[in-house]
Length: 369
Image (cartoon, rainbow, N blue to C red; front, side, top):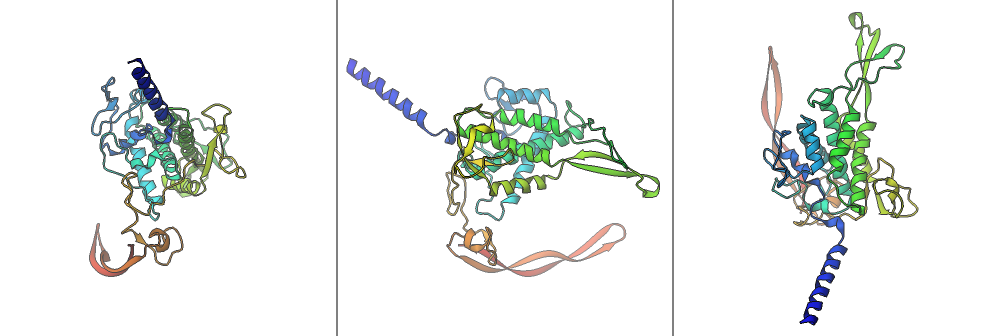
């Protein structure tokens, strides 16, 4: 009997050791399910069911960390801005990758599922971009919502009052980027747990997304004077378009740094990351980082929620990533002569109507086998 008990204890101990040795980068939920706020039509700031679900009202019910719930309660109006920020991040992700094998696919909302599928369980380039673009989306949306008076705890940034130029002066209503970046850092980073390489990777990419939004602030001016003489200008600081942020982050995706973790420093500092290849320079604050190679995305992979490239439209004459050779993974492609309808011969009638005809045209379309 004692021998059997010892065997049971040893078996349980071995099981625990095996489970703890599994790579933590593949844990089912890394706290990113708050991204599903993009599916909420009218997100509210009312947080309910504190003990059990940690959810927000309205479909879908989403898990939020304790700190995230507190931030939502303390900043009325923030939840709607967060939802909008994730929505614009998804739109931008799909735009930037629509000509690539991985085209930023999303799935319909299901309780407990991530909006981007299981690709987020891998520490690859695509995951790095998703964390950066969603963090940037929240930063951008909160900063803009402050200026528009949609968040009760912040307003325009009026701190820029000088020095002015020879023919211009500070004024107007600046986007509150400081509040936006601070709120994003508190809300987005609060979703992360652990001290492993994946945790450090997520925090770094979150901060990279915010850094690109902050760096995109530009001075905008409005002329004043008799008959548009523009004798003096009033200027304020304004965020660049989110399309510009997406393009900047896409460039960093192409040059993302593969990294390892060092044994020095604090887990929240970039100094913990070192290049996988010793001859490469350490990643900067704006660089995206990853530690795991990406799949080729050629064939359907239900585990990652990717449908492969069969049927995808490609460009026969392109040698780039949208070309049929690369997009179709060497399987070949078919060509169809498709008929398309488009508006044409439009006529403007005073006032204010535009009448158009529907014209047919034929177009050669190439799609992967």
